[in-house]
Image 1: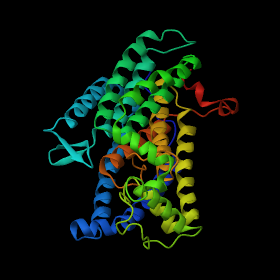
Image 2: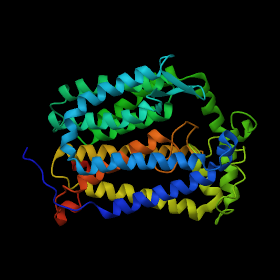
Image 3: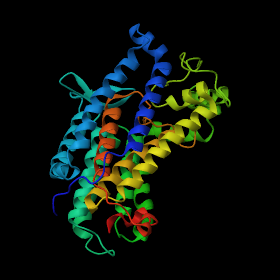
Image 4: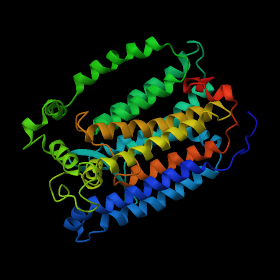
Length: 382
């Protein structure tokens, strides 16, 4: 393919929405993490300063992703997936992995704690886009080579992430892989058949404490004093917030009642302090960011770029959906962050890198005719 040249400036709506969400996240980390930060380090601002540091590092990676053509990165697709697998293997070893809350999800490299599963989400999307562009599946044919490569790699990665254990990230990776494949011309009946084929083994290997979370999810208030403590306190936070909230910084749940209030459960603090209106504002910003991103990537001039962009933004949208469903009690509790809002270095840096790549793709999009603007994203593989 001929070398692509930028045809558009960087997409301003995506930049504006990203900056707005970063600011929103920093404010909420400052508020939600003040008490736990003081208890842990005697510094009320510890978590927000850490988050600000990671924001600057992530912004640097995002700038690189914005100005280096997205086609350049496909040459690292194979290397990236091998590095991801290597890190996932290392993190579950007793010597290299860092265990927290019963799960080995981090690894220390040069004094920094990294979460390999976050890196893997980016690496796997890049790998999928590369393989499905090189070996396109059209009209349900020519699927043996791409699926013969992608399925074993995906199963290995999902197994390693699940082993940590990290069911939330396993769900995100599995669903992201599925929606990328759905953009090809594989028959829909294959996806329907894959649900029980993958679901039955998952239920067989599920851990005892994960079954317990499902039982608690069915009736959390019955177990409010033990296993249902986190989700019931999240519900109390939402109920206390009402329409307008109790006021920024005035949460009571962050005083030791709601575990992980500045990470996985930060949306509950948003609901408590800013109320329903504040929660809706955050949801509006997130949905607008993802909708705008989907809008710009569908006009990318090549299949690799469309698949890459679609996979990246779908990964963030799926992670957001899972987190919000967990915090509001729609899904059983599982540890997964809210992109750009929750405290966490690896998650924030990778999220900003993904958005940098989306902005990069936006620079190369073609001006879409009216008929194309009405087409569905399922045409991404054409």
